[in-house]
Image (cartoon, rainbow, N blue to C red; front, top):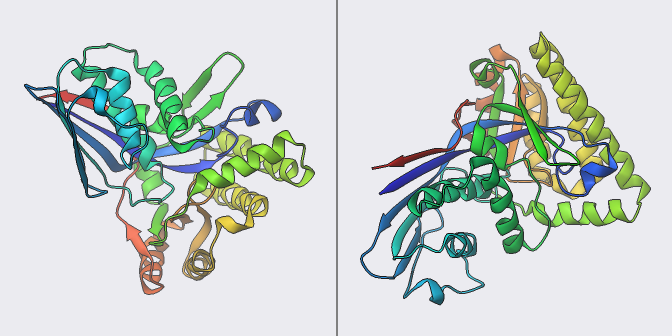
Length: 332
C-alpha cells in the first residue's frame, strides 16, 4: 500500500499574481504563503483485476469503474480520475482520499490533495517523475478540471512545506524558503471557517480578463497587491517581523477587497470587526479570490480572546500549526 499526505496553506500576500500571464504584467512579483498541518491524504492499494475504485471520505463519495478505459471525462471525482488516467496503472487499484480542510475554505485543499495524489501514484506506478515536475503536471490537470487558468502558489507549500516566497519568472517558477520559525508564526495567527464555502476561481478568471483588457481599476489594485507582497517578503527576510507584519497584511487585504468587493461577505466583515476589538491586528479572507476561511494576525497575548470571540460570533476556529514538512510518501 502507498500512503501520502501533503499540507494545505495560508496565503499571506500576492495571490492572483501567480496566475499566468498576470505575473508578467507586474515584473514577476513573489507570492507569500505558509504550510499548515491540515493535511490532504491518499492511500492506494493494488487490485488483482483491472477495476478502479475511488473513495473520497471528505466528499462522502465512492465509485467503481470496470477499467482505466471506463473512466469518464466529467465526474464529481474528476480531478482524481484524470490523474489516474495520466499515470495509467497497468492493473486495478483502490484509492481512498481525505482532506482536513473544509470544502471551499480557500486554504488550498484541492491543490494539497492534487500533490498528495501525484506523490502516491508516482510511487505506485514507479514513474519516477521528479518532484518539481509534479507541480507542472498537477497544475495542468487541475486547469482541465476547473476550466480556468490555475495559479502556481498552492502547489509549493503542499510539496515543500514551510514559509515560502513563490516567484513565477520568464524561464520557470522559483521559490525561496523564508527564515521564519513556524512555532512563532503559529502563536500569532488564528484561522476561522465561516461554514460558507466560496468559489475563488471565478473571481480570478474575471480579474485575469480585466487585466489583459487593460482595466485601469484592476491594474491599480493588483499593483497595490504586488507592492504589499514585495514588502512582506522584505519583512519576513528581516528581523522583528512580529512588529511589522500587521500593516502590510492589512494593506494587502484592503487592496484585494477593492479589487473584488464580493470576496467578503457581511458575516466575514462582522467576524473581522469583532476580532479587532479583542486584539486582532489584521485579517484577510483566505484564497486569492475569496474562500470560506479568514486568517487573523493577532497579538500573542490576545490569541485566546480572539478565538473565543470568533466562536461567539458563530465562526468555527480551526486548530492548526504552521509546519516545515511538505509531501510525504510511504510504502507500507
